[in-house]
Length: 232
Ligand SMILES: *Cc1c(COP(=O)(O)O)cnc(C)c1O
Image (cartoon, rainbow, N blue to C red; front, side, top):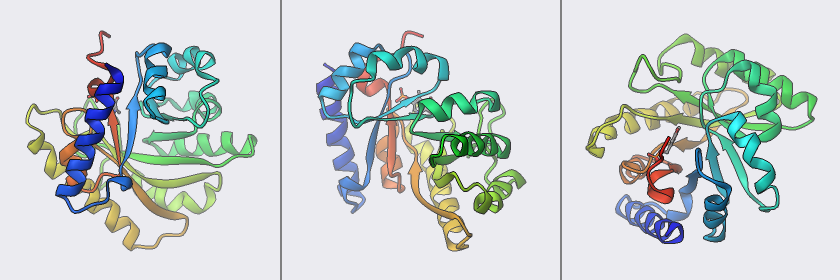
């Protein structure tokens, strides 16, 4: 079942890429395995998935020993991360795709430094300006502060932007938000800021990833369409 779901998602990724005149190889598939059992994660691994997203430090920590022998996997943190859990996250995850404050970036940088590693991060943008959602405003001061701090955040590499647009049944409604995130990424890159070079646009989930790919996504985060509806 999971293997078939993954095959179907891969076909849709390829179709959306072709439709947009893009190379399907330029789009990474991330399986979002929050709430999913290690057994189901193994099935996704057997089907060729190597990139996984989790949204809670504690949940992943509990599962990680059961998954330790899956080689060449990348585990990204994609959920809201409190600064006081930055060190734990830096230890457990290969990347943090949900950096939403300068304070968190600084904590991650310090943790990475003490571990002697460099952690790839994405800055999460609240592109729809929703009060209940995490992420930085696209036009606010804190995004600028993180970009300006990049040269001293030596143990982070700021690789791009991530967003979750306002939920709508109709994926076409997500299109303007995806487009805006892509424009924001391009505008940042055009400034040639020291230490900032953004290649990744992490956008698109189960219901709207085809539209996200048409608007430039380089990483789609898929949970439900691979593992089925989450019960919690
Ligand atoms: C849960 C989650 C996803 C996956 O959502 P689906 O609709 O199940 O594909 C993607 N991104 C983030 C940040 C999530 O929390």
